[in-house]
Length: 328
Image (cartoon, rainbow, N blue to C red; front, side, top):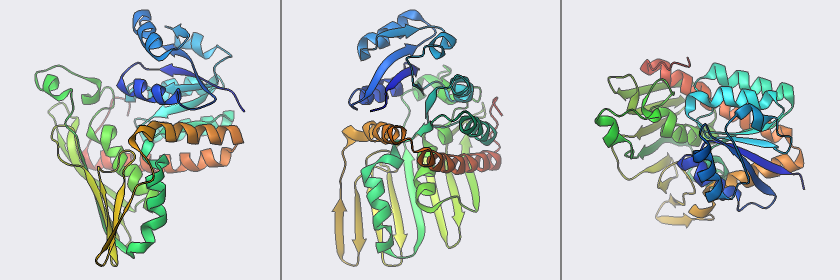
C-alpha cells in the first residue's frame, strides 16, 4: 500500500469536512496543517488529530514525509499554492473551483504532467455512486433534448455582505461569486454526462462590486440544451431534470453530492439510491487513493481533461457576463 500522508492548506468549513472524511479512508493519514496563524492551525490540528502545524508553506513543502497537499484556500490562491506544491514534487488535491481561469488551469496541468505528479480536482459529484449509476441509466430515457439544473443556496455570509462586510466568496479579488462557488457543480454534472458544449452563455445578476450573486448558464450541444441556474442570494429546492423522448430522470437535491434519482419511462417510475450523504467526500478520497496506489496516471489525466473542459466553460461564461477577476 502506497503511503498517503497529507498536508492541509486551509482551516475553514470545507477543509474541516474533507479532512474528517480523509480520516475514514484506510491508508490516508493527516500529517500536517499550514495556517498563517499558529493558534488557528493548532486549533484545527487539535480538532482533527493532526500532529504537525506549520505557519510557513515553504517549510511544509520541504517536509519529505508529506506525499499530498490538499488545498482549500480562497479561489484566487489555488493556482499559486498548487504550482508551489507541484514544483516541490508533491501530489495535489485541489478544491473546486480548480483555478480562477483557463490559462491558470492549463498551465497547472502542464506543470503537473511535466513533474510527473498526481493532480486532482476535489469535486464530489463525479465520484458519487449514484452519479455513476445515472450515467449507466441515461440511455433508458432515449434521446435527451433538455436538461435543467437548479442549485440556489442562500449563503450564510450574505446578511453580513449586505451590511458591507466583505467575504472572500463575494469579491473579484479572491475570484468569488456564484458561478465559481456553486455553479461549477452544474457544469461538472453536465460536462461529465455530455462533454464540452459547443457554446456557453451566462446570464448573471451582479452586485455593484462586479461579483455575480446568481445567474443562469446555457450550454448548447447538438440537439440538446442544458440550463444551469445557481445563486447565493436566494434559495429554493434544488433539483436536476433530464428529459428524453422516452422518459425523464429527476434528481431531488440537484447536482451537488450523493443524490438519489428517479427514472420514469411511461407510467413506471423506479427510484435508485446506491449511496449515502455520509460518503460524499469519502468517495472522492477513495477514488484518488485508488488511482494513486495503482499508479494510474492515465486515469488522473482523464479526470484533468474533464476539469479543463469545465474550466473552458467557466472562461466562456465569464466572458459572456463580463466577469473579470484580479487573477485574470
